[in-house]
Every structure is written in structure tokens, then in C-alpha cells.
Image 1 (cartoon, rainbow, N blue to C red):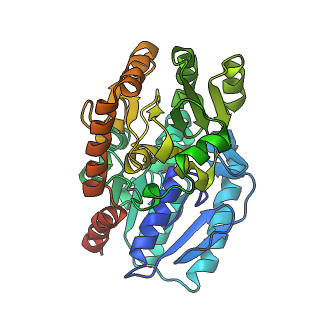
Image 2 (image 1 turned 30 degrees about the vertical axis):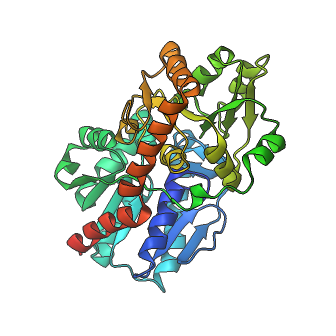
Length: 375
């Protein structure tokens, strides 16, 4: 598995770790990626590079978006990745190559396909498309790789449609397989609700946002409506290039709390918060934070955009609002906070759906079927 960002701190990192963990129960697995070392149940090979080249930003590691690199720097990155990969291939001979993100690993995988005569699978996570839409160099790079991609997996139907629209030649070899969630992890808080409230000085109901702090995530709209909830606190956990602008917006809003990326401590927030709000204004894939909140039994209010409706069925497993529509967002959050029966019904339905469709064992099984077909 050729991964494009560090193994920890992002949804795609979780996707890779959990898939690799499931695969390693019956297969030999190796993951190579940029960033700090990670010690897992399978083989890992990290590439030391700072800042880490990423698609938007990274919450825990110094990073820089690919769109900011000039051609010379991109060539240097590819050279470094090839050099590290060659060390790995001396002792690990793959039967299949699984690239994570439509990005810089794709041309490297094309070359490996020719040299090793093994199939290439690519998972599109969404942020790779973010760069492709903004940088023609990467669109051209991926387009030249399409013939060598044997299967492209998108993590939502809307993302699959977007991939096929951008690269029509991939239509007949594309599939949708979403990410999953570790159900056991989100059923066990590290502290009681009372201790959690005391630790973070949370006296009121909690409206939670978790994710990268970039403009496209729409967090600014959540801050704008915070004053409509005097008996609640809006907790925003994450980091990114838009962080300072959001801090400016939050000045004077006493019920807005900005916290850094909390790593495993975020589990307590998923479990104990009253509602998770996902205010995205761009067509991202289904965010794993949605599945994590559902697994924790917390109701979800989210934008009706991209892959989000894959999991958030309006009125059934959550509530949807129109992207960027602050009045709609505000009314949906209020419905959750003011209606315990609705909150409980949505949470129960969402947990049942996650248990049936989004366990990592199920997701890994679906991906393995693709591997077996190609091999």
C-alpha cells in the first residue's frame, strides 16, 4: 500500500491503518508513507520528509500543499519516494499495489506495474481531487496513469461520479467502497461525562466539530451561528491553514472553544457531545468523523453535499442542511438539542447502520474481493 500522507492524523490514514490491520490477519502487508515512524502489526516503511507534502494540510505534522511546490521540487519528491521504495522492494515483493489518493504515487505505481507485472488499485479519498481541480499538472499526471490503473475505489458514490467525470476512461473499472469505523473504540470513554465536563470546563450542551481547519470545511458558518445557542458551547477541534482566521472570528464569542487536534482524546468528545456538526461547503467524500460520531451514539447534523448523504439519511440517521445556509444549519442543530426523543431515534438508527455496513471487517472483505478478482 502506497500512502500519500502520515498514518496518523487524517481520515485516509485511519483507512489505511484499519485496512492493513484486517488484511494482515491472513496476508502479508506492507505500507510505505511519508511522515514519522508508526509501529503496527504489519510492515511499515516511513519516508522522512519535512514538511510533509499533502493535499490540503495536516493536523499533527508540519505540512505543505502539493499546489505550492514547483516542478523541480515535485521531481525531487518523486525521486525520494522511488529511492525509499527501492529499499523496500529488496525484501518485499507485492502481488498487488494499492495506492491511496489520486496523487503523486500514481506515476510510481504505473512504473511498478510494468516492472513487476502486478495489478494496481487506487483509492480516491477526495483531497486528491481537491488538488487535481486546482493544479493542471496533477490532472495531467493522473490522466497519463489511467491506463495502468486496474481498479479505482471511491469512498462514496458522489466521489466516484466526480472521478469518472474527470477521468472518463476509469468508468468501467470504478467501484464505491466507503471507509469504516472501529465500533469498539467509540463505545469506551476514557473518562466519565462529569469528569470530561470538568476537565474541559464544559458547563452546557456541546456542539462538536472535528476536522481540518480549512475554508472548504465551512467551520466559519458554525462560528457565525454560535450566538444562537446561549445554553450550548461550540467545540472546534483541529488545525489547518484557516485556523488564525477562525480564531479572529471567534473573538468575543464566549461559547466558542477552539482546541487543537486531540488524537485519541477526541473519543471522549464523540461519546459525550450532544451533536456533531459537519458544515462542509465543498464536495468531499464521506468523512470518517461522521461514522465515528454515529458509532459513539452522537447524533449528526451535516451539509447535504458530496458523499455525506451516503451515511446521513435526513430524518433517519441524522439531519441534513443546505451547504452554507446558516439558518438551515441553525434550525437543524436546534431540533437535535431541543428534542431528546429525536436525538435518541437518530442515534439508534445511525448506530445500527454503522454496525451493519461500516465495520472494518466488512470493508476489508469488499476490498479483498477486488484484489482477488484482479490477481
